[in-house]
Length: 123
Picture 1 (cartoon, rainbow, N blue to C red):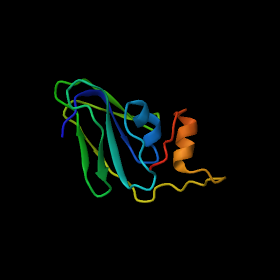
Picture 2: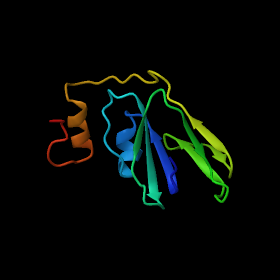
Picture 3: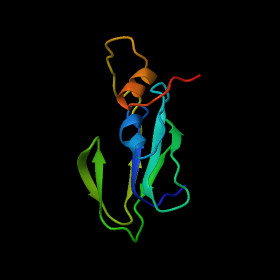
């Protein structure tokens, strides 16, 4: 699989409703385990997000004709990569625990936070 895009967002299901969703990616249940890959401003016909299971490997290769690129994690600059570099993205099992106060479902919170009309609750 190859993307040519201004950026690539990789997200866990917990992070999928932030950067990935704003780039056109789907809402993913936090009960899913894996990585979501979403191209930002893709330059090719294939412009869809892909969801990989937690055991699959993801290597992002910076194409030889690209310039130097910034790598960000949760909105913070963590480094730079150059043409020909490969960034390996892995998922840590149970990397975060989230405490929820109240009894709203994930889909109710997504609907409220993203100001979605209609129901986001699965059928």
